[in-house]
Image: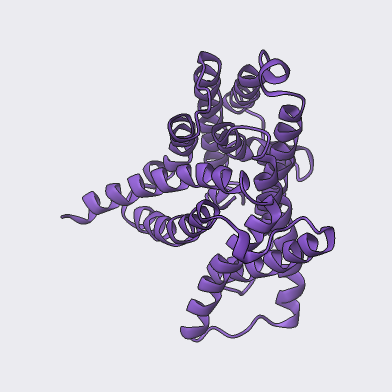
Length: 308
């Protein structure tokens, strides 16, 4: 098999696995507290990354690097991943994945109004409007009637998590460190795991390890092995052997995968509202992402949003 065919296969794996991790997370939180699940997931994933780089000869982070890693861990993995996992209790996995995919829109707004670094061109404005219209179209009619009052809470938590991820992504792009980016992710995962574990112990909202059901352990293992390792390696391979515009298509496929798989495995309703809203949102995200690349701002299509 040629390198290009392998790269397309890797792109397919990335799109499917990262899309289905939302469904796995939803299955996990049905049977155990969300922050406990997120803590275990980040601990196992972070341990794999950190051990790998230690074996390769990477040094432990310096005091200065730790002072950078701690706030980033709170933004990227406690406030973003942890709260997104908690919000999954109230909304569908497909909608959670779609909201996470909105982060280029919030990046544009932050970059424009805080850093004055982005020009709002016509395609950017159309993309922003389409993205917001798509999300609104999905839950406007049936949010309270079908899903109950907690539905809006879930949407709000997911939006907050996405916003935190956007801020963290901008800070990473604008403040380069001398630490390997993937090693940094591993340490951030470990720090966030410790923080969320302390919270679960303090709040008393946890279950003993021996009482965690098999379905939740299965979801955690799938997210760690499939999402954090297998799909991530596939993503790096596709980025090296495909044009960036093609390799980044996974970001638009993930929510579609989450919606379809969620409807098949979890019985999540897939209405015309959700289909039309998804199309509008993804077209909007594509237009905004494209405008970021053309303007060559420091934050250009930050591509690790699906680590959420």
